Length: 176
Image 1 (cartoon, rainbow, N blue to C red):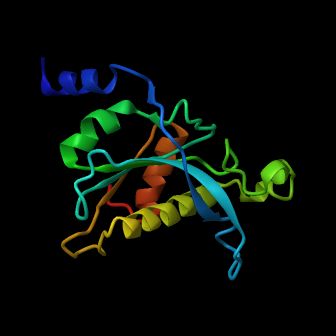
Image 2 (cartoon, rainbow, N blue to C red):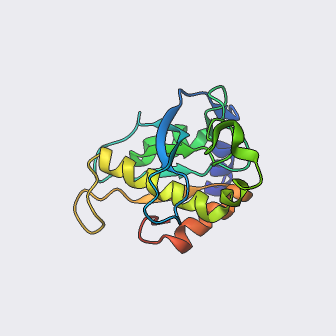
Image 3 (tube, rainbow, N blue to C red):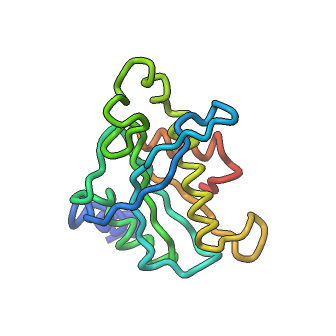
């Protein structure tokens, strides 16, 4: 079996998801409103079982257009089962704003005046804020310093687009 075939087999065997306990992050409602302190509770998942500490990578599975319930937890189990241990990585998966428990305006989130904040740009800025908070909490140092924690984003379909845009729009935060 070739290395590529082995990798593909590893990626697509086993469970479709890994259930996990949710965490919540106080996220900015409108990243473009200067001086606004309004926040909402963004659900995310964190797996640090393989994290080797400051200087180790952070893998971010981008959430997309759907709820991520605790019974689902992490998409792409191979990220936790294979990549996490191989690279000593911490894995996080933020739920996209306006989905699941991550409702910026609670029950009123779907009123037309609020939907203007349901954009990829706001979702990208949500991910940036969460990544920076996780890096700080894990004592990761700035890029170029010995304990810098490089960030790689992962996703398919719309989350794949968000993953690519994270690297393109926020190269100061995302390394790959």
